[in-house]
Each structure stands twice: as structure tokens, then as C-alpha cells.
Length: 418
Image (cartoon, rainbow, N blue to C red):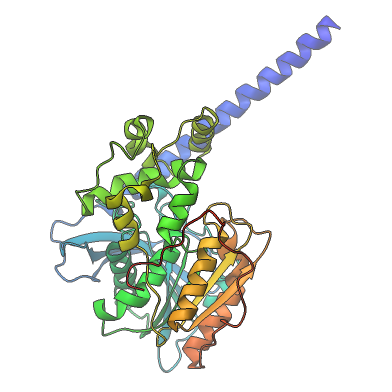
């Protein structure tokens, strides 16, 4: 028996050592891949003064049937008006362009962390969240432009959940895409985003037409959008999600609103660790373990509910998109099982936007995680976008009540501007 136990112990130890070796080898390979592409993301010495200027492209190195794929670098603009550099991706159909040119879908990704290696255009990240819809869009002849956002892979800062920064990066990705030689893209486009990208998409409906009047925005679509920010934060501030998104907010919001201070709102553990956590990619297993341990130990990122602080509450209201005008069609998809962007804040959004007269179409699904929402509703989004490009009238689904309601104890405040 002793020999058998020793043998089993030796096998287990060998397996552990092999696993450690494989993880180390994989990390070394990933580091080498990141180092190989790093020069592409460097800010040029002569930065273009016009936002949306395509600076450079190179093959992306991923296979999408029927498409040529590119990594791109382009100029964008920060909220203060200064020129910035953003990276992103382009997916261009290989089939001949139609007579009127290829329409464009601007994809805005969700929260992924602020480290350079987290950028979707970097190796290993490019096709996240694109199952069930990217291939369909390519087969329909649409160009897909996908921003990384300024500061993700490029010189920072990355202004997380700051509408003016996000929309600038989204719109300028479309401008840059149209400059690719031979792309034959039209000026018609739709913005489609998930989670943080849903925030970008909804705000694009307000800001993009003024930012880029030469382009024709036909509608915006969002999966599990981080929209009613104070409702989401007010429900999630003290748990694991607070550790997931809190560091990125703490890293970004005080840069555009210096009146926001961390002491008294963010816990000491949060203040000590927010920058290092924000730089980690959210798909990192080591980060997930760290956040689970902190939560299990009773540590909260926030010391108090941020919406109880007048300055933080005002910032959340400022960055919450108000209802879109009836002239801007909007599609919102949400899972009732979402544990990150909870369902009821977007039920509040549906009710508020319907009351305000928005041309909103909502799709509610069940038993789908936050991470899989964009992929799950992707085919429905493609059909909705196809109707926009075809010039068909957009439908309102306001006669169908949301399947969830706010908690009785949760105060519901209208978004700023509503």
C-alpha cells in the first residue's frame, strides 16, 4: 500500500510539474507574440492632426471565412480635443463590393482590462465575442471596423466608460476604415457593442452624428449595455463585480473629473491595488483567483456605495445615456440571467426610453451569461442591422413589458437628460 501511495504521489507531482511547465511555456509564447507586434502600436513621430486618419495597417493573422483581416492604427481624439492614437481591427469581405459601396458595422467590445496585451487586436484576443455574427456580416458584404479604444495597446490613458472618448474611438475607426485602399466602403454605418461597448453604442446614437456629420449613422445596437450606471453600481459595488470594474473606473474617471477623489469612496485595499488590477486582462485566471480571494476575505473595492457620494453620483448620471430620439433606431438585447450587468437596470432603461418615445426594439433571453450575450443574440442583431441598411422602418417593442422589475428597495432615478 505504501509503495502504491508513493507511486500515486509521484504521478500527481509529475502532473503538477508538467502543468506548471506548460503554463510557463504558454506564457513565454504569449510574451514573445506581444513583443513581436509591439512596434506596430507605437505613436508615430508625426502624428496626423485630423481625427480618423488611417496611419498604418498590417495582416491581423486570424482567419475569417470570406474576409481579409487587418490590424490598424489610426488617429482619434480625447474629450479635451487633443489628438490620440487608437488601434483596432478591420474585417473586409473578399467578394466584390456592391454598386453603392460596402456598409460598415462599427463593433465596440466589452470590458477586458486596460493592459496593452488585453487589446482585441493583439494576438490571441481578436475573435472574442464574435461567434454567430461576424461571419454573417462578412457574408452579407459588410465591413466590420473594431476599435480597441485609445490607451488599450496604444499610448494612454484609456478612458473607461467615458462617453466622449469611446464614441470618438468608434467613429474614427469608421473614418479610418474607409481610407483603406480598395475597400470601397460607403458612408452608411451602424454601431454594435457589448457591455462597455453597449455603453459606447448607445452614446454613439447621440454624439456620433455631430462628431462625424459626413457619415450616416442608421442605428445602434447593444448587448447587455452598461447603461444605467448608477443603478448597476448601486447594486454591484460591494461584491466581486465591484472588484472587476471598480479599478478601471478609478483609473479613468478622476482623469476627466479631478473633483472625484478615491479616499472615502474606495477602500484602502482598493486604493492600494486599483492600478495594478486595472492593468490585468479580465480573462486572466490569476486575476480571477485574486478577486475571488479578496471577496471571500470580505474585502470590498469600494468603502461605501459610490452613488451615496454626490460627486460620484453626478459622474454616473453624466455618463448614463439618456433616451435616444425617435429618429435614431436602437436595439437592446439582455439576458435575465446576467450576473454582471443585471437585467433590471436595463428593464428600467426600456421603460424610460419607451416613455420618452425612442424607437427601441428589445430582445430578452434567459439562461445566458453576460459573457455569451453578444454571441447568443448575434443573429438577431444581424437581421436588425440588415433592415437598417435595407431602409426598412424600425419597429418598437414597447407593447411588450420587460420580464423583470427593479427590487422594491432599490431607488430608481432617471438618467441625466431624460
